[in-house]
Length: 398
Image (cartoon, rainbow, N blue to C red; front, side, top):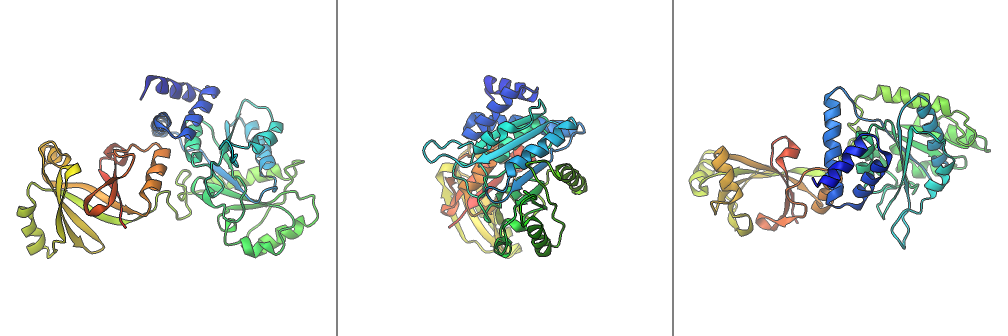
């Protein structure tokens, strides 16, 4: 890590708010310094949890534009801050089509937020990302988490029923509705209505609020609180409900990504297992005659200084790897470890997207861009230090 980046990370971890903000900016920029910041934050977070700490609670707020999400986040942050907790707020705004920066409507609305040293607010541009969030949102939340903010409140842009990306980033998802939904309940049920852990009808002083709550309760078969973020009605009770739900979570930080049956990077299956051998010809007899596998083909990949032989095995394959040069990766592996499993390859649909997501999370990579492997597959390797000692290959095939 560059000395100046390391110094910045240490100042942020020590509580310097300007340093925290600068770290998030570097993460948003997506360059090498941002990835270094994420690695430093991840290491700090793992270290603190090893000493008895725990992940921060991340609460996502989604719902249609104009539902009062900003004001609700504003009110809830004040309640949590009064209890002495350090609150982090990430408000995602639409990006300007001209500059690419955030239009910052949330920042304007948050100017009325309670002034407290316990609250850190950051507005982020969506930068064209679908699903109501910024691509750097998870990285920014990681920075806040490592720097001691808990809970972290994440407000989405407010893009309608397709706004489901928040489920990947939050432990609890709160869907904010308003009076006047009427017959739209069923039409939006297949979108954001399926991801919420808690549903709230805001602006309860408006006509139709009770009806909206009853319709939601009938559709969802769960209680729907009525609140007014504008005058504070029901906010203390809502905060208590959130605390109650958080205490009942089986694991904060598992995020399904986060308890909803999804993963950030979608791996389809094990594509193949790479086995380093001194001689493919000598080892083929065992795999073909003894195991009954059949050779699909032999190929030399000059760039990687390796000869490969693929043997289909069920839904995946075994790949025998023979080095073609003394300084090749397979030759070095055998010299250090002897013959054996050298890597595991996971099939992904979109390797560019997978790598981008891993970079945003500060995962250490050997290849930051894909290269061409055997059979014309696009591949990239994840560093063993990020996986617990296993060389992991990501593989995208046509």
